[in-house]
Length: 319
Ligand code: UDP
Ligand code: MG
Image 1 (cartoon, rainbow, N blue to C red):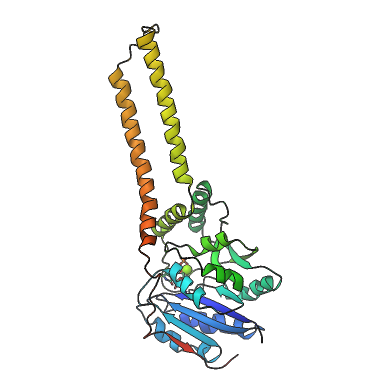
Image 2: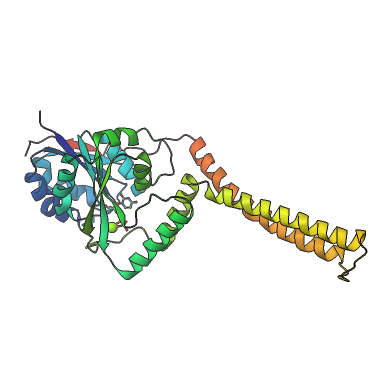
């Protein structure tokens, strides 16, 4: 039996561009592959005509297409997870539906996999200045907070070997950043450089605010550095104030103020107290971030809900 390649596509309100992506983008590529394919389209609660458009795609008659429709919008990270769980392939490729990820690089990814790579990640080379600055800042934060392995420009356009997908499917956390989790899994990673294109239709969903939130979330979910940092800062301030306090005590009260500094105890104390109160507040808010994540995980809800009424599989024919 030949090997199978799964292609996972998260789709949210892409009615304007989805047919172009499926029929003009994906179809010619998979036709020329020497492997069987299955396409997994995860409809992430689209409210426009996306699903109708998918039903009219030529792809449905050319290969197995598994359309999994979620009951509402769960977000791209969850949609990718749904797709990876459903994928049966010996290798699985994840790609955006908005045409930004160049489909023509898929054969190159596959040949890297054939050469032994377990994860093949597309790295963005061409982009706008704003985009570049934004992702620079994002990756800077990641590095400073101890997520050293994050590769700048790495995208969600990836190929994963069966073994990696199986491991990925074992991960249970709710607050998830797919590429972060894949990097965490390890395995042999290869990179290919690609140029992304502008989005042809619709709007991107990750604006600066969302990205900042994502950075904060993944920092808290994957790094102890903030906690450790405030621990060190707290220890430093305690030691410093202890020494300073002892100095005042000895200079003023034991030696009788030979330096004529005439410390007012109230001043010294109130400075320290307000400093410490500020410190406690900051460290408390950091701790709260961690607790809020524990809370989210502890609820133990399923990550997503599939709408059985809308989901379907097309079994029509091979290539
Ligand atoms: N997407 C999704 N759920 C969402 C938002 C986006 O499944 O809540 C899909 C979207 O249809 C596209 C991909 O994820 O296929 C990337 O989305 P987008 O272009 O908005 O993100 P960006 O390119 O800015 O990372
Ligand atoms: Mg996009």
